[in-house]
Image: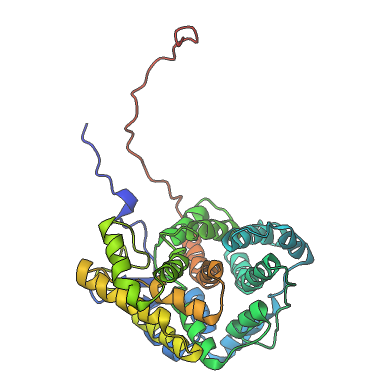
Amino acid sequence: MTEPTIYKGLVGVYADVSAVSKVMPETNSLTYRGYAVQDLCEETDFEQVAYLLWHGELPTAAQLEAFRAEERANRALSPALLRVLRDFPKDAHPMDAIRTAVSFMGMEDPESADVSDAAQRRKAMRLFAKAPTAVAAANRLSKGLEPIEPDASLPYCENFFHLVFGKVPQPEVIKSFDVSMILYAEHTFNASTFTARTVTSTGADIHGAIAAGIAALKGPLHGGANEAVMHMLKEVGSPEAAVDWLEGKFDHRALVMGFGHRVYKSGDSRVPTMTKYAEKMAEVVGDRRWMETSRVLAKQMLERKNIHPNLDFPAGPAYYLMGFDIPMFTPIFVCSRITGWAAHVFEQAADNRLIRPLSHYTGVEQRAVPSLAARG
């Protein structure tokens, strides 16, 4: 019998078709519904991009107004969910908190069992609106602080800062955050998106698919890398120490977080835009240490290993400079990526086939069960 070709990690395997986004490695470009993400960052905002991902086109002024109104009307958490959040362990990772909160939202959602396209879209909006409230509430409760009610007069990104810090920062900070949310929103069949599509293929509801996506995103080889990047930069400490620190990693063949990508081989197309806005954050805060350290590391990695940074590399210090706790970085990613996950849930369900790959067995051949006495 001819042994099958095994594609570990599904490298190079096309599992389905999609019209949501496209990575073009030959030009290091990423598009959402045909629009280059760097152009979307400069010409639109995150709420417009969320609409684009779900509906296929950018909204008109009237469509955007209705979309924003629906999001603002769905931000509040139920008293029952707030009680659950209060009971979470204070040292629980925020990713575990938001994953559990999403599952709870699914249990209490009035359309939980309805997997029609219209119901899934309504539930996606509720998740989109409530996730920032849950992330911020869990963060504050872990510090012994009371959650802050969402402010329906504020746009999405401004409201998130209000929920976390109780105040809205200057426009330059909001713009940098908004850009990060656009860049993190979608990225084809990445690990968490494929996980969400797999769950959807079973006929499960969107809350289950999103909870599974969150579980996949927590890993440091996927979404958790932005947290790992900031821990790494703090370990390096300064631009002057960066070269020696990196040499130590090379000597031990250790993984350097925030570098390399499964798809991009000549650099992640999102990095220049995120770096631009991370630099703006350094200027606003008046602290260039992290960006200078990043610059040295990136230069050395390219010269020594020919490996480029990925989006997590500038996003980590950008979020840190915004004032967010490091464990908050990946939950912020969740709030963004819910838009992409939901777009894929809609797409998978519209032309569904159960995702069920094969495995090539390499274990012991079939054998008889020995008696207990024979086993000694």
